[in-house]
Each structure stands twice: as structure tokens, then as C-alpha cells.
Image 1 (cartoon, rainbow, N blue to C red):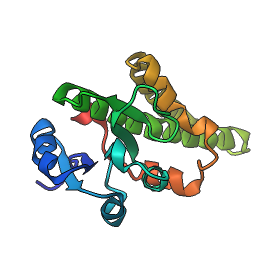
Image 2 (cartoon, rainbow, N blue to C red):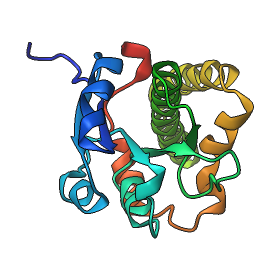
Image 3 (cartoon, one colour):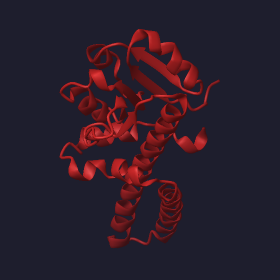
Image 4 (cartoon, one colour):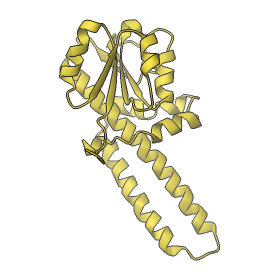
Amino acid sequence: MAGQTPRPTVLVVDDADRHDRYRSWLPSYEVRAVETERAAMDVLSDDVHVVLLDACRHRDGSLVERSHRHGAHVALLAADHDDDVRGPDANVPEPVDRASVVDTVESLLAHTAYDADLDELFVLCKRRAALIDGNADRSKTVAALSRRIDAVAATLDTTVADFALDDFQVAFHDVDTPQRDEETERGRRRKTYSHRTQ
């Protein structure tokens, strides 16, 4: 139906005989499935929200880096507990079951919404500061911006309140990553999906 928010898209990179399993585990999502990193590179686009990557296919980090540039978060499937999470955003250790996959996807989608809200808050605060510094009387516009800032800040507070310790590591992943460039920011802002609308 026109006007509906599209379902979030999950890209699975794993053996073909497991593709239907992921689709059955994630019926609320648009699941795309491929077998190799090369194939994933070919289909990766700005409308992909989460990438589920089999640990055996995690090579040089190029897929993770490109996923981040498109605004998608990456979870490493069947990862060892000791695997470094600084590349991918999350690890799903063995055994990979429905509960762990669903929880991970929902958590990463929450981070996508958090990133978008944080970007919006920054833009709103910058716009309000510019208006306040101006000479013209724009009190009504400033008041409207302030109300929107309060609303976005409240949403962020609610999201953060639901974060677990590992979620904070994902949320602030880019603080230690130099690739937080304009292309990455545009990719995040293109994510129209919000986990709150599901």
C-alpha cells in the first residue's frame, strides 16, 4: 500500500541450504540471501539495514566496511566469543538459533534508528543555534525547533535506556573509527525505517 514504511531488509551471507531457515526466522523482514562476500558486494545497497555474515566468509573486512558506508550494521554469525567485534557490529556465537538471530537483528535495527535520531538532533541544534545568533526575531521558529529537539532527545533517552552493555559498544563504534565521513552519514540518514514503527 502506498505510503507504508517498507520492511527493513536483512542481507544474509551463508550457505544456500540455510537461506530458507533465515527467512522462516525473520518473517517480518525482507530477507535477501547470497553465498559469498563477492555476491553480497554485488547486491549491497542503501536499502539494506542489517547484514548477517557467516564467520567463515569474513575475510579482509571489505564487506563490513562497505556495509557501514551504506548505513548497514553487520553481525558475524557462528563467531567465537573471542572474535574481535570492532570490525562487525555484533557477534552471534554458536549455536546460531532463531532467538539469537532475531535478538541481534532487532538490536542492530535499534542502533540504526539511534544513529538517525542522533544525526537529526545534531542538525536541529545547529539550526537553532544559527537562528539564535541571528538578528531577526524568529522566536516562533526557535520554539518549534526546541520542541522537536526535546522530542528527539526523549526518543534517544528511551532507546539508550533499553541498550545492554554490548549495545553501547555498537552505538559508539564510530567514535574509534576514522571512516565516519559524509558518505557514511548520508547512508545513515537514508534509512527511513524506525524500529519503533514495526
